[in-house]
Length: 287
Image (tube, rainbow, N blue to C red; front, side, top):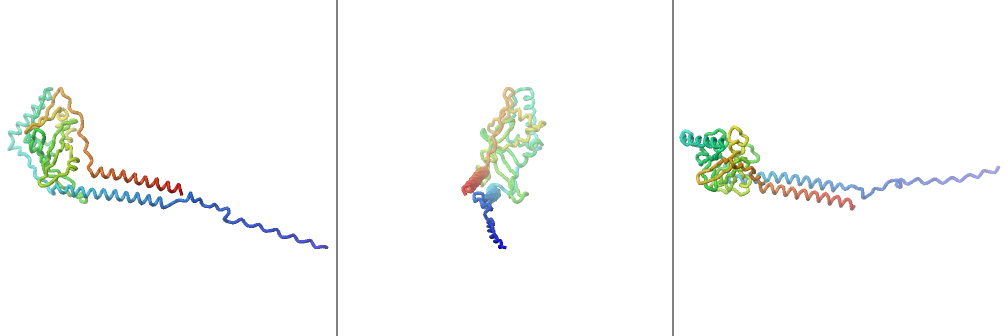
């Protein structure tokens, strides 16, 4: 029998290259880890700078305040009540007349000398917080000169360290919003200079603010006052029934130069960070 011719072997199919089905990476979708790192570094550096600047400002402020303050308070003696018994009787009579006239809807004026004001601070418990820190030295037709010894914070690292502002505060009193307050013109410390920036933060000085809510003390009478006037040697407080008490509030305390600088720097810094982030996003979109 003839031999059956053998069938040629069918050619083997080439295997599919392993790299044909693999999806090539899209360079436009590649992440750039450096951008996030740079932004994080910028943010942390900015935060560290702000913290450092704040700490430096505190110490700088302490050094400046130390130039015109003292480590101990100056003595501001209180008037002796027994030695000033006659003056105390006159003061009580003036206060009683003032209350009576005001209560009867008549014009009432309380005329106070420096000695009378200091005697009231010594005699009446309501003014205990002002004792040995506040004493009226002189009253002119334009200004009130007040001897002060104010306790202030000392070193930022020591909570028990204090400084004392000892000197004479020259002020212009005003009546507003039912409150007597003092616009500080200057502070005189012997042999030292108090910078304008500190005075700007300190003014207006409002020692009577704590008495506004005292319904059993000076609060109701102070809210009824319609005018405040100065003359040489006297401060005059008047209640005029036909006039309305001034209702405006004293001007707000302005920020010091350091605080304004911090706010301005923070705004510039935030703008820089935002610009950096925007630039990095644009560079990634183009790559």
